[in-house]
Amino acid sequence: MAEQEVTLMKGNEAIAHAAIRCGADGFFGYPITPQSEIIETLAALKPWETTGMVVLQAESEVASINMVYGGAGAGKRVLTTSSSPGIALMQEGISYMAGAEIPGVFVNVMRGGPGLGTIQPSQSDYFQATRGGGNGDYNVIVLAPNSVQEMADFVDLAFELAFRYRNPAMILADGVIGQMMEKVVLPPMKPRRTEEEIKKECPWASFGKTADRQPNVITSLELKPEVMEVRNLQLQEKYRQIKDNEVRFETQQCEDADYLIVSFGSAARIGEKALEQARAEGIKVGLFRPITLWPFPSRQLAQLARGKKGILVSEINAGQMVQDVRLAINGAIPVEHFGRLGGIVPDPDEIVKSLKEKVIG
Image 1 (cartoon, helix red, strand yellow):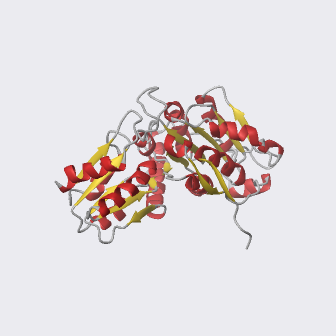
Image 2: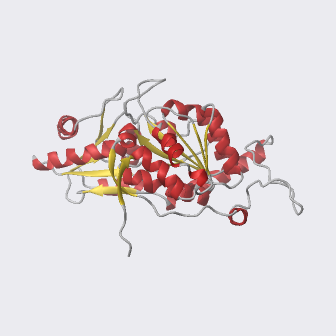
Image 3: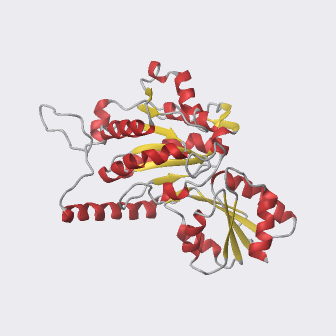
């Protein structure tokens, strides 16, 4: 077996390399800190000369999301990347794609808000991602990487899930993961699909009028409420299937734990150090890391929490994922929250201190 090549790069750079290697047909984006290295890396790699992948800097985030809508509507593997205020501008297009059941991939490297906020890391887009920031009853598949390796791995996974369920998928990272440098093994090169393969795999896509058929119409509009209700019920059934089949999470030292720390993304890496520090002090703590933020691993967390004494949800925001944790636990044991705001990343000892004060008492 060939030896895997290990490379040192930023999380943002890993996204760009992985997009080319997983056979993406196009990237449409607009630079914004802290994720600008993605489009910069793509521009330097020039994949249009090697794989034929289109790389285009749009005039705005609104333009880029609509380019993704158009490319994905033709069955293409296309993606865009941005940071918190930019993703907010894309919400209309994401909602339209969810309503039309069009697959596409979006990467959000979060920064502090609200508004333009700060360019420092944050996790305050949890609601925007998991609750659906646009209009209507819809969900976006949300993957939360906590390493440069997962930034690379989740690109192909996001495309796979998006096309499997004809649904938008988001990689929800943050400025820590986007900017940090780590060793990574890039995915193997996958050829782009041919037009014949796309037509076979995506019969719903719009390819324009041909001699043997009229073009498919891609739209989320329906003027008849009874028809729109049926469409919504079909979407809800699809979301139930995703909840049943696509939950992902990770645990550390939970078997003998009295207490749990629940964190995602970069906060979970800090939680690992807090776990080590607490264990060194004789406090039996385990870590539960949701990898899919939607669908949230509610049932799995509830099962794991049986017999525990309490949970501390640590995240870099004012308290967003903690609501999903409380819904999952349903009052069975105490659930408390610790977070830092404004782009401040907490230290492990702050988490341990909060665990002692708020949960252990």
